[in-house]
Length: 548
Image (cartoon, rainbow, N blue to C red; front, side):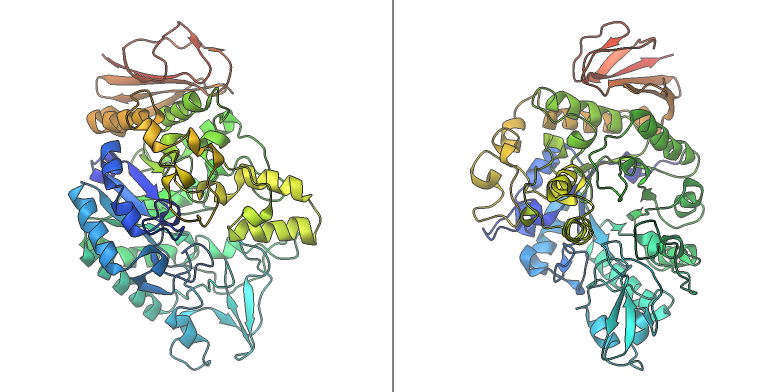
């Protein structure tokens, strides 16, 4: 396996709106990030992935970009960004931008021109049709929006204010590549590519199958992993990516493993790794992700291993349990009750960081931040939650409001977007003003100030895990084999490289578990170092290393 810096790195995702507010307007900003670079350098991470900071009317929290060359006023300006980039590099931190190239905002100049007339040079920058098909939007309703002036419909796979770009048009691709080069020339270190697997559409635009209970067709088979996707990505690599020392990770929902490997095969010159969704799609309900169902550990292990083994020869894997689109890991996969929160947060972290692939830490994960308990839809800010509540509660009466709020509190994206909990002062030290979304009330006990200097804290456990990854090649490059794959309680595996073997044992339950795995070697890290033969305490996790 060829070595690379991005394989050995640990990535920390920042959701700028919720990270740190420097000016008291209740919204996190770039200067707030600059003020906390010491915290991140101390943690030991290598890369900061910034969720979008471009100019945007904010219909989908910045994923609707109105100007790729400007910074959203809420976050500051380009001088602030330039300072952030410079100071991050001084702190030995790389910066990865969020590239949103499947769609823009309807307030982007390209789209403003596109809807002026059918013969405008920019009209073909987007996907316009005289008659729409039956596709539904990811955020609910039709994926097509009528424009009275043109008597045509434009495609928006997400919000109405997010029209899809027409990648069939070479001028669109040229414009995107030009913009990417502009950022690379500034000195950024890579791109996380939002829904990149959706940029190529089936040009016949057929109706999609209509799921039971829906009035709209599923366009997924025709917009995900489309006919020209690899041509486009190879062109992007040739025109931009290959000319810089970049880290690239593509968001690729809905693609089976055999087809996904084409994106990251080292010989194909496309991307370095993908975010896949199989492992965070195991606990949904009848109406998508909206449920309070728990993920079965056997299913989780099987799914994670499927991707890890597939990437073993000539590809690379990304490792994550939460991000800006997912609920908090400790609430979803662990146990956020006071008795078990710390142990289970460390258990999840040890398991993930000892696996094969590049680990991602989402802001606050290193503190064991938990889901928020929503008691009113008025507390929600996420367009997906708000639209789904209207659809399933107000319009179709599928769920009661109480049920839906329970599901939002379990699986909603706003759980990840409550403000970073810095200390036990007002608003968790996030802002001197009123935050754009409520702070989780448990910030009095769960906060960075309480953990940074506590050697037994979750924060310092993450710090040690990251340090070990930078020290032992077996953690990065070793082959991985699952132990006791059918256990619903135990997540255990080995990593092997040359003469070294790493053995990981993790109890993912709130009760004692027995096992038959022979254990030997030196304890590398554990959330409880008491090693009882063939037994693990609730949420106990341990990694041991041995040499042949």
